[in-house]
Amino acid sequence: MRKLFLAIRELFYSKLRYILIGLIMVLVASLIFIISGLAKGLSADNASAIQELQADYVILDSDAEMDMTKSFVSRSNMQQIEQTDSMKEVNSLSIQMRNATVNGTDKNEDVSIFITEPESMLLPIVAEGNAINSTNEVIVDQSLKREGIQLGDTLTFGEDKEVKVVGFTTEQRYSHTPVVFMTSEKPEKMNAFVVNSGEASLTSIQDEIGSNYEVVTNGELLKGIPSYSQEQASLNMMIVFLYVIAAFVLAAFFYVITLQKRDQFGVLKALGAKTAYLIRSVIGQVLIISVLCIGIGVGLTYGIGAAFPADMPFKLSPIGMLQSSMLILAVSLVGALISLVQVIKIDPIEAIEGAGK
Image (tube, rainbow, N blue to C red; front, top):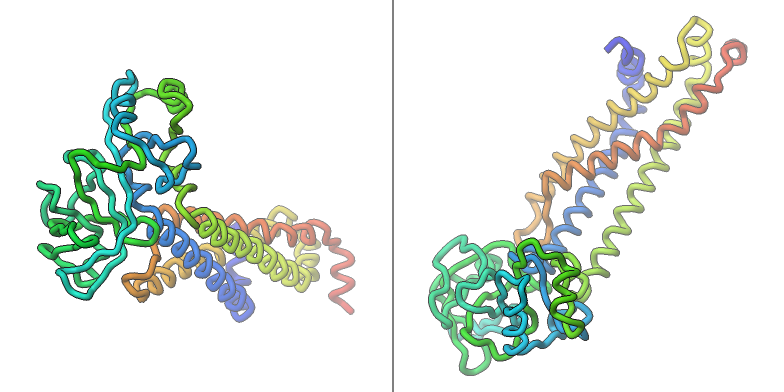
């Protein structure tokens, strides 16, 4: 604590100066947190159903370029893959983008239909209601509750397919629409196979099933979702620029402040203060201001997030907030390093002469 005495005393002495710096840091940190929350929220809104797939790998048509909606496989293909040695469990997945009529009224909802076999590993955990017991029952994402859909309501696809909502699940969105899970004993059109392979590697599975298929992970499959990569790249570029801006702004602030204190530092050196002590003082100020401002930014972001509408794709996670906080702290320290050069170069005699003029 004694080593930080000078840093803390100066913070109290020049309150207005450091409050202004702190305000800028709080705003920059909050902006980074909010955009990160939007990026994560949009990612989940676009692809949480793929991110939450309970499978080791996904097998697609090799010509689909990792886009499941362009991939088409047959039941004979499924039987062939099931017979390979590395497969423990194989389930089919059909994806349809449809418009659903609610309870036979004029109310419509755009949904993504995921069709798989009964007892499939793809069927999600039910958060409310019951599991699927027949092909005329479905589980839907809870976001449809905000649209007024309740347990027992019916959804009609086209003219003849009517199903009953028996359960709600969470975190199941695809291409910015809620997912509706239904089952079929023998799906006619399949887009992909999801597999659990035990300890078999992706390369060994690819070699075993041949070049007509492409084996991908869930993470790679995200790249095939329309607009997913472009959407995330734009937001991530904004976040990177905010980090760069934060580094330059803080570097400029602390550089100017250090120049203003050049004479004081020179006098302290003349009185016997070591350069290392002055450097610790500057770094201590940066750490104290950064930690306080990041903490305020975290609280402000959670407050703003709570005020957002429920249907807004905004998602905060403790791990993500911690990672962003550590990055902002690192950027703050890097931005302040340039001012340390001035502290090291200060000549006590020149500083005293300058102070006496």
